[in-house]
Length: 394
Image 1 (tube, rainbow, N blue to C red):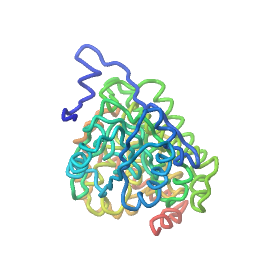
Image 2: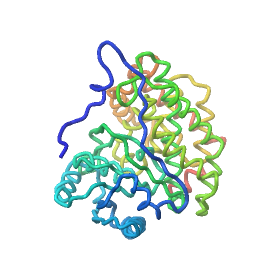
Image 3: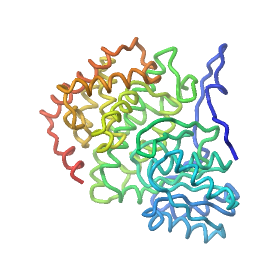
């Protein structure tokens, strides 16, 4: 059983050189109905006994389909119920339950927290992990890291792994049947990929998630991600609103999951995610908004910080698909200076903030947050907030 803490920077960098490094899953499979072929896909791993990790709801839906697929390929399975939080307590509990079950792979089925928990459990057990996301709300599935939370749901750490998922299987039919809000939140998370990768590449001291320099390939993927969202995001959200899985959905799901997943990990994060995570320090935000919704707000502040001409373009896109673009839409107010100070201080303390290609100070962060708020209010006044209100009411 693996008990060592893996630190990728210790592997990839030293005082004499900082190489370019790209990280990616071994196989990515996307399409309508692919969840029913998981048993065939894991033949690549020669698996004979798999643990299927999912919530109670997930086991009654997608998990049951996967187990049926495994049975058809004579792969036995262990039902493992995820209790909802990617915490050390949950992970250690599952490791203890599985370490005597002689499983040879772990299949994590569900949203971002279940997927991340699955990666952490598999690492400790020395198993390959197969990721089957049921939402396209974030870019967790393809990464070799897990965001860790306390038992109360507060983010408190990130774990890194020496291997990426062996397989990522994304059934767009499943994703298209989920709430539109999840797909749109995934767009908010994914849109940051291009702008943050570009910042890391521009800054000669910028580093990606493994402490290395970004490659041109992953930076190009970040740009492709943004173009895909701008071109197809509205169409995809409209399709998912009526449960339709079409080409626009396929494109946006790939952008949200694969392109953004490789792009953020290999391209690097910067102000957008530093500020997004800082918003979780405000309880009312943490309890009521999705990660990608906070990243959308962080992205606008990132673009304002850079004086980037895309700031208005991004705000208008976010408004049309239903992402928050000003503090009022995060149940915050510029008048509550203590909340702004909390977010500013937390963002300043984030190491990724210093991937920005300028000297960052608390005053600059605060001005960028408030500047993004003012831009968002102006755009909302022009475009309206119908899409945002509709998604929040779901």
